[in-house]
Length: 138
Image (cartoon, rainbow, N blue to C red; front, top):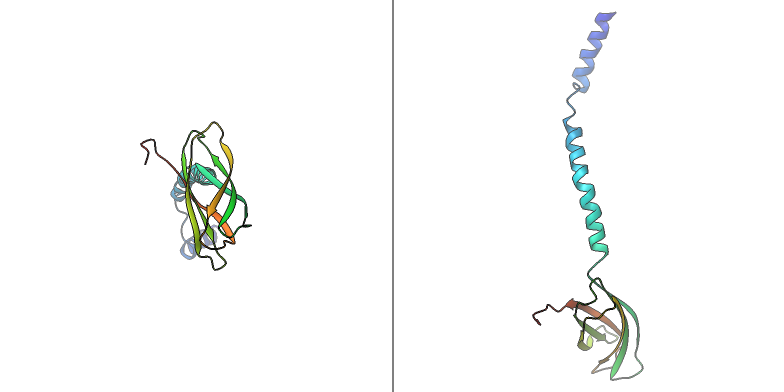
């Protein structure tokens, strides 16, 4: 009987391969130990940007301008910003664009109302981007 068991083990080893070392487990553990902290940092970093802009509303009651209300949230409230606002017509063509300088303040969250002058009647408005103005004045 012991010969058969030994024979079965040899047969199983030939068929399914021999039991190898556990090196793959150490490699997998090392990858997990580096990948999980990076994944947590990456998720936090990209979900909490330095500058976040949220469109609240716009009103197009006039043919020559449109009013836009938006919320700006900054991690560093003393950061001065330069925001580009655009107005578009029914065919999504840009009919008005302005750059608004927003000085640094003590508030991290700021709601603004601005008028965008237009050459045609606008049907919507949006904040194209808000970039930080570096301290050199660029």
